[in-house]
Image 1 (tube, rainbow, N blue to C red):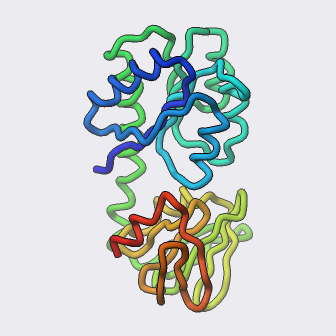
Image 2 (cartoon, rainbow, N blue to C red):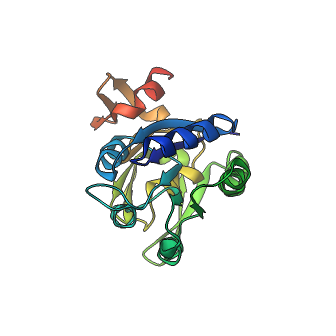
Amino acid sequence: MSNIKCIIVEDEPLAVKVLSDYISQVPFLQLQGTFKDAILATDFLRDNNTDLIFLDIHLPRLKGMAFLRTLTHPPAVIVTTAYHQYAVEGFNLNVTDYLLKPFEFERFLVAVTKIKTTQTEKQAPVESQETKDYLFLTVQKKKVKILFSDIVYIESQREYIRIVTTKKEFLPKMSTHEIEDLLPAKLFKRIHRSFIVSVSKIESFTAEMVEVNGVSIPIGRGYRDIIDGL
């Protein structure tokens, strides 16, 4: 089972240290970075994916809840704050848990275990998907069968995705994260926050771009190790 990648958005050094120590004690958590304000976190998320954000509420420049509202497809969020009055707003924004400072490791572990359980449930159907060579997606109110072998690449189009196949294009209303969960990991690779490509359709690549069926697609800075592994 894959690790849960996470970041800390917190401006208090002591709180960052406590969270970092807690994260280091949980085998399935992988800390990608710490950010003292939401603007820096936004810059990171522009080119990188994460599974979980540990988010403080009172941050400089942009408050935690305001930051959450800017995310189109937010990952899981665990709020860490000394202020209980924001709990209702947090849960209205679908945060997974709300930790009041100071919190013990046991309480922290309960919160991250919720994330792990959700991840396991989401990944369960992916394994059965490996035996199929197609999927059905809702496009313009009808279910359309799309063969994996026909897909060239997938591009994010805000609340829609553009699926380019060898025959035609489809525009279902879903996120790239949702379609990625439905695709066999061996056949498709995310190379950019906005692009997923079919490995079999790759004709050439450099450190900055991939060419599939004559189309050049950029490689995000956080995804270059994926291409190196092909």
